Length: 226
Length: 226
Image (cartoon, rainbow over all chains, first blue to last red; front, side, top):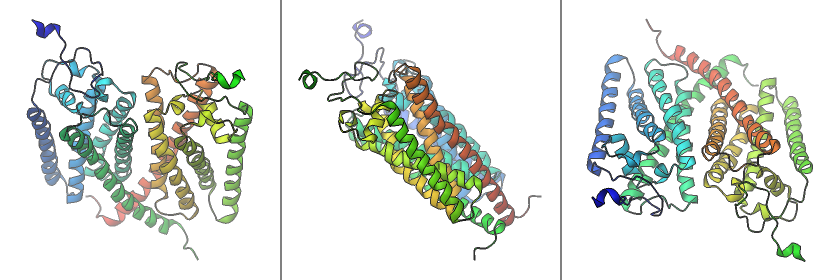
């Protein structure tokens, strides 16, 4: 009987934030991460196999498609869910999309407190960059001439969003993250760093390719310099 | 004598923010805007004249150079100043770079309160996009093959930063802006909208040009589809 009268203490930092109606995670960490990991493996495997049989794509193009499928679905579904659901921490049904965010909020409570920057950035990530990733899948599969430009735009959006994500935490003194190695270093630093490293690499490779195309076009359309 | 004992009330919203050591603007609004406007006219005129005599550039290229010179100097010097100076509102010397921000903070007090998103975004704008604009000037003048890509990257950075700038204010209920027409509509909405409209147009034009170059390269390097 007391259980329903005394609100559960939340596990988020800083410990004094008020989260009315908080309900503890009903799934364990292993279950939550396994569900996310399994979903990612299924998506990547499906795109890898499909892209290998359907058209004559290079290995590099197939790897890019796997990445954009994984990150696009993560943006649109997982990050989209937290943008649209400002009370995910009150859920008692075990919905995996809410459980993921109950777990991740241990590394960044701004998702629970609806920090204006975090939600704005995730809105753009989920509903602009997410569909952008899906468009890139189409662009690579059908070798559309805008594919490199869109790769750069989506990747730069991810990179800029992530830089601001880290920078705002730095300026606020990293107060939103639990201090344990798993939450601060693994979830917060390492997982988010993926969206610094891979987009930077894609921007570099795509920009080099575009430059070679532009240089070729410049050579064709202009008289040679003396 | 009382003047030094009783702190001046600041003009910023919300009115209850504490700004220790606030010192009222020593230059009038007309002087501040005239100085900024004059600087902008000098920069644009100089680039327009130089670009017309120095190399054979198209009118579109010269207009782009004027824009990137204006916005680059604004980013690097004006926005760079506020990033590095967290106490601009205490200045008593009439330094124009501090007076500009005392005036603009009436439209957005987050510059004075050192809001973590605003300062992070301005840091990237000043010290990544600012030099990026200068690189674009060089890229256009010497028709470097990376110029369109960099135009898109800098413009997308401006656009994304500005979208987040408006979105965070929306989510916080526009509490950081004085309600007068001049501050809310002119400074906050209209002036910032310039960096929505012009970057969007530059992205569109640059992306179209890149696509035509990529399409030409695709035609040269691949066998025709059956």
